[in-house]
Structure formats: C-alpha cells, structure tokens
Length: 130
Picture (cartoon, rainbow, N blue to C red):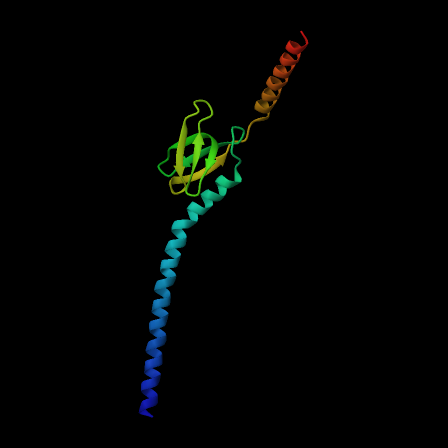
C-alpha cells in the first residue's frame, strides 16, 4: 500500500513538472510569434503590392519616418523603395517597417496621364506622317 502511495506521489509530481515545462515552452512560443508576426504582415503587404513606377506606396517606418514612391525590388529580408521624383533608392528591412500603404491615384491624375499619353501618341503620328 505504501508503495502505491509513493507511485501516486511520483506521478503527481511528474504531471506537475511536465505541466510547468509545457507552460514555459508555450510562453516562449508566444513570444516568438509576437516578434515575427508583424514582419510577416509587412512581407505580405509588400508582396501584395506590385513593383514598378505605377504601383505607388507610402511606407511608414517604426521610427515614424516615411518613404513615398514605389517598390522596385523585393528580397527575402528587405525590399527597395524608390522615390518617384528623385529616383533615390532606399533599402528597407521588413523588421523596421510599421506599415505599407498603397497610394491610389485620383481620377484626375489617371485622366491627366491618359491625355498626356494620347497627346504624345498623336505627336509621334504627326511626325511620322509629315
């Protein structure tokens, strides 16, 4: 009978010990997830955006700086933002970015771009004819 009590106590301590180890592991896993989740969210946002001059974005960094332009390159741990006007490239690590916001062109800007493209096409056509 005493042997049975010792076995019960041993199993009770083993269960409590396994529970404590399990809780410590779960806490560490939760910390790891909380650290990598924002980076994965930013990677997803960058991949959703197209690269190139027509896909304009506003990138807000964690230090409250902003980079406006377009995404020119995407790598495994970073991406390159290019200023549309100056063509300056900025390498941005995913873990330093707070948000990537797509800049939608206004209807007026789209109309103006279409008019300019049409005027350039007409000008080329007239030069070819005359």
